[in-house]
Image (cartoon, rainbow, N blue to C red; front, side):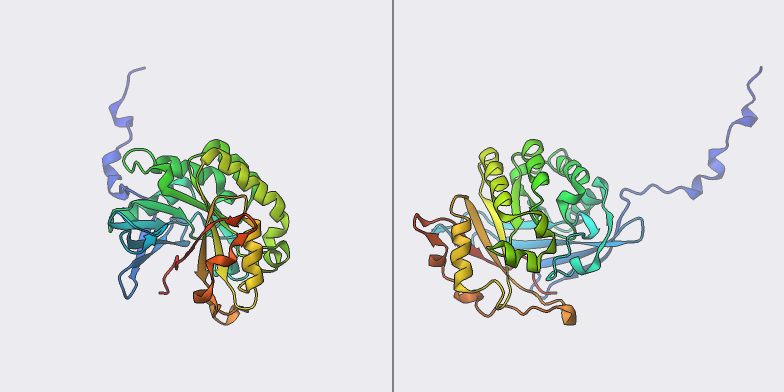
Length: 302
């Protein structure tokens, strides 16, 4: 049978209907803080949902570490989201009040770095935005692998993943990405308080969680970041500091105290007045000082 060129589909007739797009998401808005330290990116996904990514600028020469001057210079860290909404339901968290809507694809996670890189040179990435990264494990790991490859070439040690403490996910991460920095949203030194403010913590008892963190540290050989939001009359008393010190005595860790940012009339918590008065001496046990204590705001108020 003879070939008929007239039967070939005419692409030129419809090519105007196609448009190449370098990414599936777009920056809907970019909002700078009054001091220009942060830029919040409101990103619209192809399904019409929105997530946030935040560029945080800082100078490593400011302040001290271990009593010594810091080296370096200006840096930018990007905080990325891994989900639209979140299943964990932490009752002090604005994202938790949204409920869970959808997982982001690895491409949508990576595109947050693409968008941010257009406004600032990104040195570090932290998975501390919307969602629980370990509940979207495959997409998050694939995105991290892309971030460490060309053209971004971030070191795994410049990437931090924050989790509420999903134990099986931490164990899996230890095998798949052993050089990654791990952060844990602890927020309370005892299981009872933790379950009160983080309902999902019922599935992750503190004793088992601490065992998983110690095991993770044997592979990573890096300090684990402990995130602790300060809630007035809930977890900010001296006894809680002592309990936290005891809990962390066998773990190499850095504790970051985070001022609570009220989420409007829905919040039943208040910002702790005691934050500036927290004493490092509280975080000690019979064996002496057991962790470094840093206090800084991870997210500026918009």
